[in-house]
Image (cartoon, rainbow, N blue to C red; front, side, top):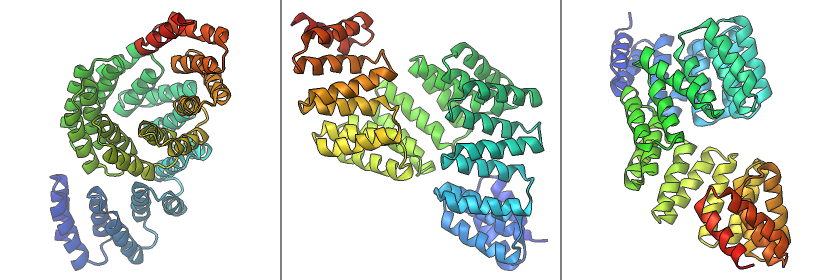
Length: 421
């Protein structure tokens, strides 16, 4: 028996990752044919964020046992962690050649397709997994997440309800259902799911995470902070939860605390584009322009196809009066997501600033075709019409902003401009 492997399991169970790595390393050294020692060592290196070491160990493991399903599975997920999607895809496909009915590999393959934005193949793969096991709540849940990405909310609800029928007490399914209700604006049903989780699964972070997000949506920032801190206590290694704590502090106006939390979140998950972007916004609000720029650039490196990240960088350039660079980023953002009204509005603002009133009007009308009640677009369309010497049309849009009156700064500007006509 490989005593080093057994010692590694004890250390791993206790959360002692460095000691576990040392034990499994000895296990590989003294028992070079023990495939389990290789796989566990690679797993620990992944947990430590030492991806290249994990890849080297797994490549060595494949020389020992070329057709080991778990080795291929871990290697695929290691590539996935690094953002090397095509390499991950190849490993998962090879794993499925070894065992075509492995649901874990099918789910990881589907996640890879999702991250590559190949949603049709992700759906097809997950339906195959569900076909192999109709009671597999995890595959149902993964399918629902992809359907949400596609905006097919009714189908996602149907899938999650089937998952609940198959596994009535599954915490992940209840959490996903609550998150979907929250996204759809059904806050009462969302609260019901999250309270159920807190009550029935008190050791799970999911209930407090969901309640924190619900409280944020309702503007209850201190209550949100309390829930997120409880969730972190249940899973201190989850960088996204620490990020939510940072978001709560940011909403409360404590930017220094927010900065500390985001920096801690990045130590746990250095590649999180969401956290990098949020930290950049905190730096920007503190006037730390270079730090904000660096954070946005790192976020874009982690997720180059995110329209929102290019919008944030474009907005930073506008604030620094670097208008040519701003326009380049905003056009890229708009190309990545034509429905992104933030980028379109900012492009319209740049045209208005440059005195290109007709182009500004075209852009703001495009926004209003998608979101007719967008007060920013209404106000700035009116400004561009005034610049184009068309006061009667401008008055019509100013009156709409005044009638809506939901945002004080827009209401005040519209009232002043209308009063001057």
